[in-house]
Length: 329
Image (cartoon, rainbow, N blue to C red; front, top):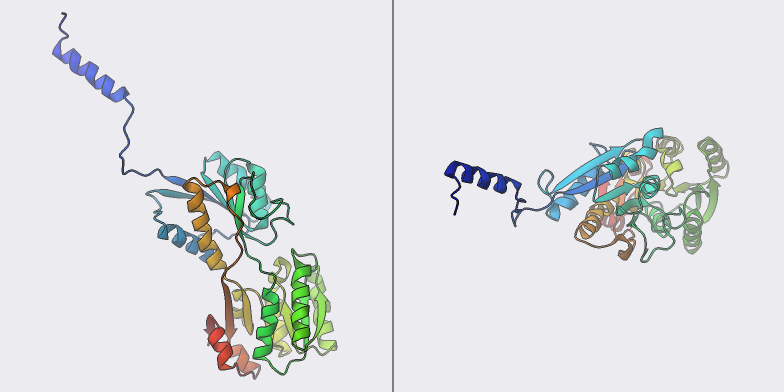
C-alpha cells in the first residue's frame, strides 16, 4: 500500500474540510427579512406606528440584527410605484404594506411573496381581494382599520358631551370607501337620539369652505367628521373652524384631539399595527396568506380634550370621562 506523505495528507484533509458543507448550529435561527412598504410615511423613522410594530415583533421573540431584518421602502412622490419591486428584488420573506395604495403597489409587484396589508379600509372595493373570509388562492392578507358603526358611536358620544345639541352637521366625502355605510349608520343613530342631521358633502378640499358656510347659515350646533383621507388632510381648517364658531365636534383620529378638537373616537391604529406583527409571525412560521382571514379592528379609542371642553363651556360627565382612553388636560 502506497503511503501518502504526512504533509500531503494534512493538506488533503484541510481541502476536504473546507469543501464540506457547513453544518448549522441547531440553535441558530434563520434571519427573517421583512419588507415594510409605505408610500405615505407610515414606516418613517419617527413613526409611532413603526414603533408599535417593532414592539409587536419583539414580544414574539424577533430581535433586529439577530433573527429579523426590517427593510423599509418609503416614498410620497412618483417613485412610490417602484417600492414594491425594490423589496421583491431584495428577497424579502414577507411584505407589510401600509394603506390601500401601499397594498396595491405590493400586489402589483409580486404574486408569490406574502403580503400583509395594514390600514386598508375596503379590501374588496379597492380591488385587492375578491372576498374577505378567507381570501384563498392569493398571496394577500391583512387587517382593515374600519368598523362602519364607529361614526354612529361618535355621534352618541358627542351627544353625551353636549346634551343640549339638537342640530348636527355630518361632514362626509361620499366618494370615500364605505362612505354610504358610514352615513347610513350615523343617520340612523341621529334618528334614535332625536337629532336633526344635515349632511355636508365634501368631494374635494375647495368644497370645505362651502360646507362651513352651510353649517353656519343653517345654525348647526355641532358636527361629526367621517374618516376619510381628504378630510383628514384638512385637520387644521376643521379644528380652527370649530374653535372660531364654538362648535363641539368629533373626529375619527386622535391627532385631531391633540390639535385642539373636542373629542375623537375611532380605531386604535396602534393596536392594528401591533396585531400585524402577529400575522407576519404566522406567515414566517409557514401559514399561507390565503388561509388567513382578513381581520378588522377590535379596539377603539376615545380621546377628550378637557381644555377645549372648558372653552366651549361644556361639563364632561363622569360617565363619559370613565369611557375615555385618554383625557387631554
